[in-house]
Image (cartoon, rainbow, N blue to C red; front, side, top):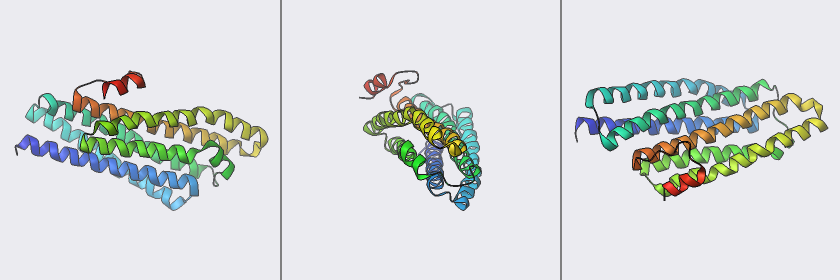
Length: 227
């Protein structure tokens, strides 16, 4: 194994470890949303430092590989893809921290009515699942798994779209829940963004494997590209 191959193997290992950490952060944030567990919320906030440390290390390693080894073809695409995936994972980690801070700032647990009618926990599960599928696709370079990331996104978009009307109705019927509904609106938007980060990750995987750029294309076009 050449020195470059060793560095690329380590880079892939590091980005996968960061991926796992971010998924764990989001899973904890999901639990905080449903249980109002303040101790677990503190764990998420503290865990953000680990995510940031990964982000800095991976960025530096990518820059060093580009500068020292001048990789070509698929190796170059891999490094460029990892640099962009590193950013998307860091952003997803930021959303986990932001969500638990929003939940705790509400002062009390969300009412069951708000949780059930918005189906926010189901939405959160879908977003986490998209990240997990993308991670598996990257590790195994499996096209079928990459497709699932884009198809799952429709469920998140639908729940996100319906949430506004649901929250407005709750506020009209129970004005005392205005603050909670506003915080839930903010949380849903952040979960939707986590789904967007998962899509970005999937696009970078396709770029690395097939040298195809999927950004700014519609979902149908993306699915056609990765048949």
